[in-house]
Amino acid sequence: MNNRHFQLTETAVADYQRDGAVVLRGVLSPAQVALLALGIEHNLAHLSPLAQVASKGDDPGRFVEDFCTWQDNLAYESLMRASALPLVAKALMQSDSVRIYHDHLLVKEPGTRQITPWHQDQPYYNVSGRHNVSFWIPVDPVPVESTLRFVAGSHAGTWYMPRTFRDNQAKWFPDGTLAELPAIDAQPQRFPQLAWALQPGDAVAFHMLTLHASGGVSPRQRRRVFSARYLGDDARHALRPWRTSPPFAGLGERLAHGAVMDDALFPLVA
Image (cartoon, rainbow, N blue to C red; front, side, top):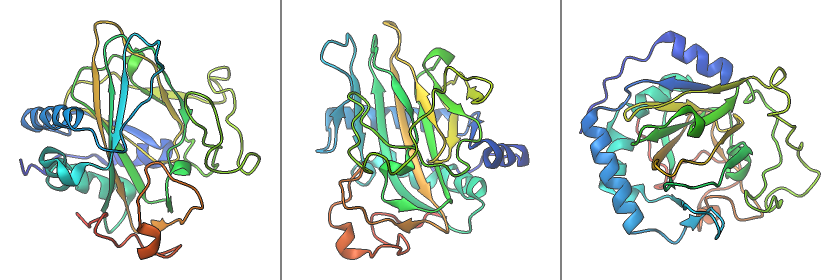
Protein backbone atom coordinates (compact mmCIF):
# COMPACT_ATOMS: atom_id res chain seq x y z
CA MET A 1 0.00 0.00 0.00
CA ASN A 2 2.99 2.30 -0.47
CA ASN A 3 1.34 4.76 -2.84
CA ARG A 4 2.70 8.22 -2.22
CA HIS A 5 1.86 9.62 -5.65
CA PHE A 6 -0.70 12.41 -5.68
CA GLN A 7 -0.46 15.50 -7.83
CA LEU A 8 -0.98 18.38 -5.44
CA THR A 9 -1.43 21.64 -7.31
CA GLU A 10 0.01 25.02 -6.40
CA THR A 11 -3.58 26.28 -6.36
CA ALA A 12 -4.51 23.78 -3.62
CA VAL A 13 -1.55 24.92 -1.50
CA ALA A 14 -2.52 28.57 -1.98
CA ASP A 15 -6.15 27.78 -1.10
CA TYR A 16 -5.05 26.04 2.07
CA GLN A 17 -2.83 28.90 3.12
CA ARG A 18 -5.55 31.48 2.41
CA ASP A 19 -8.72 29.69 3.55
CA GLY A 20 -7.43 27.16 6.07
CA ALA A 21 -9.25 24.35 4.24
CA VAL A 22 -9.07 22.67 0.83
CA VAL A 23 -10.65 19.64 -0.85
CA LEU A 24 -8.37 16.94 -2.29
CA ARG A 25 -10.04 14.71 -4.86
CA GLY A 26 -8.72 11.15 -5.14
CA VAL A 27 -5.88 11.54 -2.65
CA LEU A 28 -6.28 7.85 -1.72
CA SER A 29 -6.46 4.95 -4.16
CA PRO A 30 -9.41 2.51 -4.15
CA ALA A 31 -7.14 -0.10 -2.53
CA GLN A 32 -6.19 2.34 0.22
CA VAL A 33 -9.85 3.22 0.81
CA ALA A 34 -10.68 -0.49 1.14
CA LEU A 35 -7.81 -0.98 3.59
CA LEU A 36 -8.90 2.05 5.59
CA ALA A 37 -12.47 0.74 5.79
CA LEU A 38 -11.13 -2.51 7.24
CA GLY A 39 -9.09 -0.52 9.73
CA ILE A 40 -12.16 1.45 10.80
CA GLU A 41 -14.20 -1.70 11.34
CA HIS A 42 -11.34 -3.20 13.35
CA ASN A 43 -11.22 -0.01 15.44
CA LEU A 44 -14.98 -0.12 16.08
CA ALA A 45 -14.68 -3.74 17.22
CA HIS A 46 -11.72 -2.93 19.50
CA LEU A 47 -12.37 0.53 20.93
CA SER A 48 -9.63 2.04 23.05
CA PRO A 49 -10.02 3.50 26.57
CA LEU A 50 -10.20 6.95 24.92
CA ALA A 51 -13.30 6.06 22.89
CA GLN A 52 -16.53 7.88 23.59
CA VAL A 53 -20.11 8.06 22.35
CA ALA A 54 -20.65 11.72 21.46
CA SER A 55 -24.41 11.44 20.82
CA LYS A 56 -27.18 11.59 23.42
CA GLY A 57 -29.06 8.54 24.68
CA ASP A 58 -32.25 9.47 22.84
CA ASP A 59 -30.48 9.88 19.49
CA PRO A 60 -31.79 7.28 17.00
CA GLY A 61 -28.24 6.89 15.69
CA ARG A 62 -24.86 6.75 17.39
CA PHE A 63 -21.82 8.99 17.06
CA VAL A 64 -18.66 7.10 18.06
CA GLU A 65 -15.21 8.66 18.40
CA ASP A 66 -11.85 7.13 19.21
CA PHE A 67 -8.31 8.50 19.32
CA CYS A 68 -4.65 7.52 19.13
CA THR A 69 -4.89 3.91 17.95
CA TRP A 70 -2.74 4.11 14.81
CA GLN A 71 0.20 2.26 16.37
CA ASP A 72 -2.06 -0.75 17.04
CA ASN A 73 -3.93 -0.67 13.72
CA LEU A 74 -1.92 -1.78 10.69
CA ALA A 75 -4.33 -0.12 8.25
CA TYR A 76 -4.08 3.21 10.03
CA GLU A 77 -0.31 3.00 10.31
CA SER A 78 0.08 2.18 6.62
CA LEU A 79 -2.07 5.16 5.66
CA MET A 80 -0.36 7.61 8.00
CA ARG A 81 3.17 6.57 7.07
CA ALA A 82 3.14 5.29 3.49
CA SER A 83 0.28 7.01 1.63
CA ALA A 84 0.46 10.38 -0.09
CA LEU A 85 -0.66 12.12 3.10
CA PRO A 86 2.75 12.93 4.66
CA LEU A 87 4.07 14.56 1.48
CA VAL A 88 0.80 16.41 0.92
CA ALA A 89 0.97 17.60 4.53
CA LYS A 90 4.52 18.82 3.98
CA ALA A 91 3.48 20.90 0.98
CA LEU A 92 0.31 22.29 2.55
CA MET A 93 2.08 23.28 5.77
CA GLN A 94 5.11 24.61 3.83
CA SER A 95 7.25 22.78 6.33
CA ASP A 96 10.56 20.98 5.98
CA SER A 97 9.50 18.22 8.37
CA VAL A 98 6.32 16.23 9.05
CA ARG A 99 5.43 14.39 12.25
CA ILE A 100 2.43 12.22 12.95
CA TYR A 101 0.38 13.89 15.68
CA HIS A 102 -2.57 11.56 16.17
CA ASP A 103 -5.47 9.77 14.53
CA HIS A 104 -9.17 10.34 15.21
CA LEU A 105 -12.06 8.05 14.30
CA LEU A 106 -15.49 9.65 13.76
CA VAL A 107 -18.41 7.38 12.88
CA LYS A 108 -22.01 8.56 12.65
CA GLU A 109 -24.29 5.57 12.29
CA PRO A 110 -27.49 5.87 10.20
CA GLY A 111 -30.00 8.32 11.62
CA THR A 112 -27.59 10.11 13.95
CA ARG A 113 -29.04 13.54 14.76
CA GLN A 114 -26.08 14.77 16.79
CA ILE A 115 -24.42 17.70 15.10
CA THR A 116 -20.78 18.62 15.47
CA PRO A 117 -20.98 22.27 16.60
CA TRP A 118 -18.69 25.04 15.43
CA HIS A 119 -15.26 24.77 16.98
CA GLN A 120 -11.52 24.84 16.38
CA ASP A 121 -9.35 21.83 17.19
CA GLN A 122 -6.11 23.40 18.39
CA PRO A 123 -7.47 24.87 21.67
CA TYR A 124 -8.29 21.30 22.78
CA TYR A 125 -4.75 20.12 22.02
CA ASN A 126 -1.33 20.23 23.70
CA VAL A 127 0.40 21.88 20.75
CA SER A 128 1.36 25.43 19.79
CA GLY A 129 2.59 26.64 16.41
CA ARG A 130 1.19 27.30 12.96
CA HIS A 131 2.55 24.31 11.03
CA ASN A 132 -0.20 21.70 11.23
CA VAL A 133 -2.83 19.98 9.09
CA SER A 134 -5.70 17.56 9.60
CA PHE A 135 -7.08 15.29 6.89
CA TRP A 136 -10.79 14.32 7.17
CA ILE A 137 -11.13 11.14 5.09
CA PRO A 138 -14.49 9.37 4.56
CA VAL A 139 -14.81 5.80 3.32
CA ASP A 140 -18.52 6.35 2.58
CA PRO A 141 -20.04 8.94 0.21
CA VAL A 142 -20.80 12.12 2.14
CA PRO A 143 -23.48 14.50 0.80
CA VAL A 144 -23.03 18.20 1.39
CA GLU A 145 -25.70 18.11 4.13
CA SER A 146 -23.47 15.86 6.27
CA THR A 147 -20.00 17.02 5.32
CA LEU A 148 -17.65 19.30 7.23
CA ARG A 149 -18.28 23.03 6.83
CA PHE A 150 -15.49 25.55 7.32
CA VAL A 151 -15.31 29.29 7.91
CA ALA A 152 -12.90 30.49 5.25
CA GLY A 153 -9.88 32.28 6.71
CA SER A 154 -10.77 31.58 10.33
CA HIS A 155 -7.35 30.02 10.97
CA ALA A 156 -5.75 33.47 10.85
CA GLY A 157 -5.06 33.69 14.57
CA THR A 158 -8.05 34.10 16.89
CA TRP A 159 -8.44 31.29 19.41
CA TYR A 160 -12.05 30.67 20.46
CA MET A 161 -13.16 29.13 23.74
CA PRO A 162 -13.25 25.31 23.49
CA ARG A 163 -16.36 23.82 25.09
CA THR A 164 -17.86 20.36 25.48
CA PHE A 165 -20.10 19.54 22.54
CA ARG A 166 -23.17 18.28 24.37
CA ASP A 167 -23.39 20.61 27.40
CA ASN A 168 -21.26 23.63 26.35
CA GLN A 169 -18.96 23.51 29.39
CA ALA A 170 -15.53 25.19 29.52
CA LYS A 171 -13.36 22.26 30.66
CA TRP A 172 -10.15 23.53 29.13
CA PHE A 173 -9.32 27.25 29.21
CA PRO A 174 -11.10 29.11 32.05
CA ASP A 175 -14.16 31.16 31.13
CA GLY A 176 -13.23 34.62 29.92
CA THR A 177 -9.69 33.82 28.82
CA LEU A 178 -10.51 33.28 25.12
CA ALA A 179 -13.01 34.84 22.73
CA GLU A 180 -16.46 33.29 22.59
CA LEU A 181 -17.73 31.88 19.32
CA PRO A 182 -19.73 34.38 17.25
CA ALA A 183 -23.09 33.54 15.65
CA ILE A 184 -21.54 32.06 12.53
CA ASP A 185 -24.63 30.73 10.72
CA ALA A 186 -26.53 33.98 11.34
CA GLN A 187 -23.86 36.08 9.62
CA PRO A 188 -23.00 34.40 6.29
CA GLN A 189 -21.45 37.53 4.78
CA ARG A 190 -19.10 37.99 7.72
CA PHE A 191 -18.32 34.28 7.99
CA PRO A 192 -18.23 32.77 4.46
CA GLN A 193 -18.44 28.99 4.54
CA LEU A 194 -16.80 26.25 2.48
CA ALA A 195 -18.24 22.74 2.12
CA TRP A 196 -17.77 19.89 -0.33
CA ALA A 197 -19.64 16.65 -0.99
CA LEU A 198 -17.11 13.82 -0.89
CA GLN A 199 -16.61 10.39 -2.39
CA PRO A 200 -14.39 7.60 -0.99
CA GLY A 201 -10.81 8.53 -1.83
CA ASP A 202 -11.45 12.26 -1.38
CA ALA A 203 -10.37 14.20 1.68
CA VAL A 204 -10.52 17.67 3.08
CA ALA A 205 -7.40 19.16 4.62
CA PHE A 206 -7.76 21.88 7.21
CA HIS A 207 -5.73 23.86 9.72
CA MET A 208 -6.26 23.05 13.39
CA LEU A 209 -7.47 26.63 14.00
CA THR A 210 -10.02 26.63 11.17
CA LEU A 211 -13.57 26.83 12.50
CA HIS A 212 -15.59 23.81 11.36
CA ALA A 213 -18.87 22.03 12.01
CA SER A 214 -21.07 19.32 10.52
CA GLY A 215 -24.63 18.03 10.66
CA GLY A 216 -26.16 14.67 11.41
CA VAL A 217 -26.80 11.88 8.90
CA SER A 218 -29.95 10.49 7.31
CA PRO A 219 -31.50 7.14 8.32
CA ARG A 220 -30.07 5.64 5.11
CA GLN A 221 -26.57 7.02 5.52
CA ARG A 222 -23.54 5.76 7.41
CA ARG A 223 -20.65 8.20 7.71
CA ARG A 224 -17.34 6.55 8.61
CA VAL A 225 -14.49 9.04 8.75
CA PHE A 226 -10.83 8.76 9.67
CA SER A 227 -8.79 11.86 10.51
CA ALA A 228 -5.01 11.89 10.24
CA ARG A 229 -3.28 14.82 11.91
CA TYR A 230 0.27 16.03 11.28
CA LEU A 231 2.66 18.63 12.72
CA GLY A 232 5.41 20.64 11.07
CA ASP A 233 8.53 22.63 11.86
CA ASP A 234 7.24 25.13 14.41
CA ALA A 235 5.03 22.75 16.45
CA ARG A 236 5.92 22.83 20.13
CA HIS A 237 4.66 21.05 23.22
CA ALA A 238 2.10 23.18 25.07
CA LEU A 239 2.01 21.75 28.57
CA ARG A 240 -1.52 22.23 29.93
CA PRO A 241 -2.73 22.12 33.55
CA TRP A 242 -5.82 20.21 32.37
CA ARG A 243 -6.57 17.00 30.48
CA THR A 244 -6.27 17.74 26.77
CA SER A 245 -8.37 16.04 24.10
CA PRO A 246 -6.83 13.67 23.29
CA PRO A 247 -4.61 13.22 26.36
CA PHE A 248 -1.06 11.89 26.13
CA ALA A 249 -0.32 10.24 29.47
CA GLY A 250 3.20 10.84 30.77
CA LEU A 251 4.21 13.18 27.95
CA GLY A 252 4.73 16.10 30.32
CA GLU A 253 7.40 14.07 32.11
CA ARG A 254 9.31 13.57 28.86
CA LEU A 255 8.80 16.87 27.04
CA ALA A 256 9.16 20.29 28.62
CA HIS A 257 6.82 23.14 27.78
CA GLY A 258 7.96 24.67 24.48
CA ALA A 259 9.97 21.62 23.42
CA VAL A 260 9.97 20.22 19.89
CA MET A 261 7.50 17.33 19.64
CA ASP A 262 10.36 14.85 19.49
CA ASP A 263 8.86 11.71 21.04
CA ALA A 264 8.12 8.14 19.95
CA LEU A 265 4.42 9.06 19.89
CA PHE A 266 5.10 11.58 17.12
CA PRO A 267 7.52 10.04 14.59
CA LEU A 268 8.92 11.91 11.64
CA VAL A 269 7.40 10.63 8.39
CA ALA A 270 8.67 13.20 5.87
